[in-house]
Length: 51
Image (tube, one colour):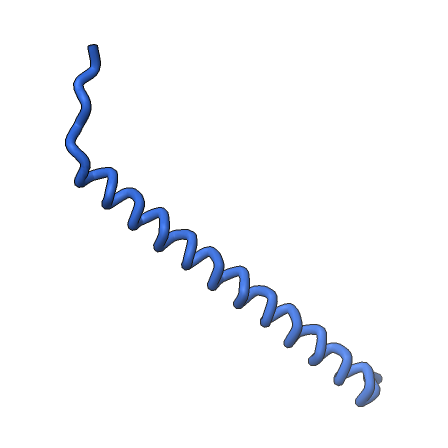
């Protein structure tokens, strides 16, 4: 049977994992926004002729 201490340790570990995952998600969302912005800027540039 789990003790209160073991449950508290598990909860603490899960909270830490959640925080790490949320930070990673936020960083990926920021990177995605920057890449989308860069793509839109590239689409607006005049196309260069290839000789």
